[in-house]
Image (cartoon, rainbow, N blue to C red; front, side, top):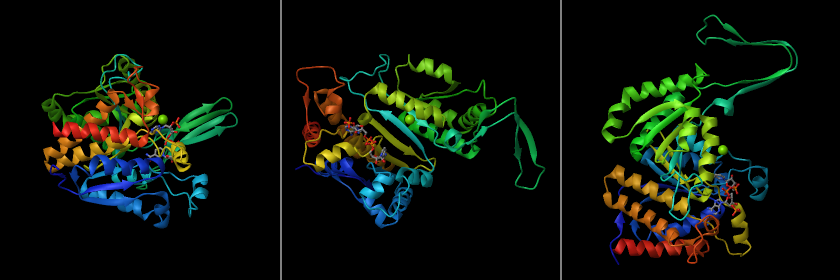
Length: 407
Ligand code: NAP
Ligand code: MG
């Protein structure tokens, strides 16, 4: 038995719900604990325990990430009315991701995991395209109104310091219509820019940022100017040293260029654009089970998770005793992402190396044709392809990992 690798600083672990909770335990037992000596600060975000603690456990977990710097999270149920009944909850608690994001003040980055036997739908994409989505304002926090008849719509801005209110005509409606008013905050846009530059520097990839600045000369151009100012002030030299670039371009141009790029970039997008484009990138790159997600806070805190949910349908099959073939790739990559970051922050290259080796083992397993049902449908057809069940997939990765580590 070789000596276990020591993870120097405590890791914050957040356990979750349903099928992902089952895979989470297997990943720890079969892929992590046999090789790592880790101190874990554990938070059980199982929906029932969140309910028992009046959701205090979620807040405690977020504060633990602030304390230690790196957290790794399993998927969790965001309760709706059905879930309140199913688990006899006191109420429909808020989304844990929303709560944690609000406390850490972060931006979410989503990046597909690519394997050589599943080709992205866009043939030029060779490396992953990461989406950095601003998670504040725009249509998600807007004002809307039905206009029933002809008339004037005006907005009034009243300064908080008692200055004179300013009235501006929005539209002189000739007849009935509809209205939408969006807003954003300079501080939020600045945090978004800082998170994107931090992420890109960390991953050593170029940043593209795109808005419709030619048409929206204050709002979208305002985003552009904040990014430009922040880049020139704090990042230009660091980017030059790392050999990476930042550029802004009109969103139409970015959309056209993205189809011709090799990938390997961070595409920063406003809230709505990021919402829509991340689904396009996920679908064109493969499946939801192959999409990683990390919350990067401008304060230097990191939270890693899978982009998918708790895979409820598979869990119900599992409860009935039926065999499942759920894919644990994104959960494994949440752990490797967190471990690699921990290793970098602690200056422990053997932990970074372990994260690299585990990812390599997982990728090689799929590339050897051993995969779960979701991937079998997408992979290049080969006689050696073999569908395995949930546990069989993790077992196969464990075998490959042992081989790689002993080489
Ligand atoms: P989901 O868990 O993402 O699953 C939707 C479908 O995608 C599954 O039924 C499955 O398709 C496929 N899928 C997703 N992950 C997979 C995996 N690892 N392996 C194989 N197939 C996978 O979304 P949902 O069922 O709509 O949501 C379930 C719960 O998750 C909800 O309570 C929601 O609140 C929560 N949720 C949590 C997070 C989070 O914590 N980050 C994110 C989203 C949703 P097939 O059934 O066709 O095989
Ligand atoms: Mg979307």
